Image 1 (spheres, rainbow, N blue to C red):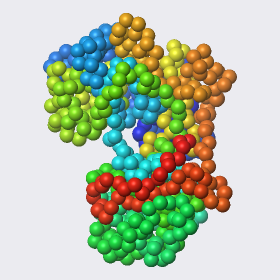
Image 2 (cartoon, rainbow, N blue to C red; image 1 turned 45 degrees about the vertical axis):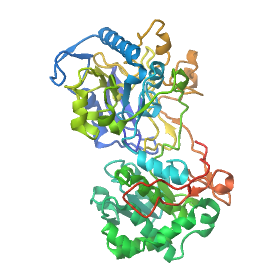
Image 3 (tube, rainbow, N blue to C red; image 1 turned 30 degrees about the vertical axis):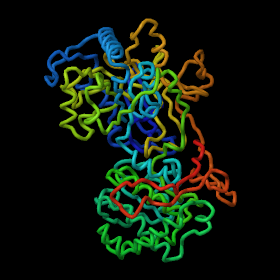
Image 4 (cartoon, one colour; image 1 turned 180 degrees about the vertical axis):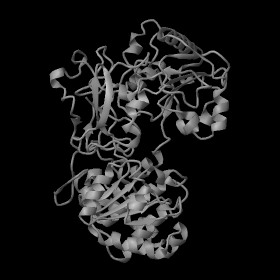
Length: 567
């Protein structure tokens, strides 16, 4: 049966699970999927073993000793739901719904049970809980790209096969997103030159034609230096800049202040290497840039990504299939998730994921953690631990395995993704992995699970593991736990507005949504890319945030005036 990996990875692999007597016995990459091409990563190749690990949590657990003691007892789902519902009801009555912090991570990126669909949002809206800003992964880069294009989306990664110069900027493709490498190999077979820009000589850098070991945090300076060489060669696309961008004169002034000699001092790279790559960039069309999250994980990350993203506008690479930049493909495909914000009793505050150490104060009385491990992935761990040890803080976690929080909070078993080779008969919603998250790409194909195997122990999916006995007539809350997709819902029974069995795609296929084409000025159809202003869809801004490369300044208003409509 067909499934898909919902982990936080670029590739959204499609997998095929063999089921015998109700058990998943084999998993392999889907050979018919054009991006997966039959291969899974080292981690997911052993995923079935992972689901059967001896330390997997199979039953609800309740802490019986002091926080930090690690003492738990097994309880039933009825006991767990009853206690949680009573505690939540008491918190809402005494302190208000904003005292609840639903702390969602990227452990799963499914549209129904993961971060892409803001899992549980309807339920939290009914309670009036605080909003959770999930910013730990890619927010700075997304912000920088939005300043340039109005969307974090970019070129279709499959079109790298058409690129003639490929810049792998801060990404270790062979280790974290290796399916893109097949398209890079196709490009190399046609004569493409591959450059890795990375402080570390990674596996990808070893395989590239050229490696520039840049000083961390100086990516914006290198981008300006490369564009300086493009200008010196007279290779800027003046027609494209005039007709399809805004802010060019300001950016040009900034570029001219960054000749290769100055950039060499900033980046630690030889001036000759900067000039050589700049010359190659000036003379090679199309150039495709792959930049990922490492570039933006410093104080000037948004500025760095914004400046790198200006390069295709200067060179005019958006005119050509295989030209442009891709960081996140989240702007390519959007399912219509109805989170029912109308259920909120009124405006609520927003709490920020990366500020857990600061914002988990006395005003928060319940921390509900799912698809996240803040003790292992959030800054200020000593302070986070201190706040979690508060005896007045009611902490609930939905998890498959004991995490760093085991001694600090409750555990409730969650269903594992690989338990979903067959759809359950009891009406559990399908798990729809996100097409995207930051680097994810499946050519517009949204994988849908239709069946699953019975879960081990008492594990349940995220949508089931939420208390509903909160008040008389709690059916209102229960009715809003899922995140059904409007317009052709593959996750609901036909009687509830979903697609009937005859309307569903075969179990071995994926729901395939073709991405709309962009048009260049002469009307030639391109793959997904920048929408030119000539077609009424706005201009691309090309102005970086300023001369400094280590701080994210207030961004000027020389960016996209009109955000393109989402796909």
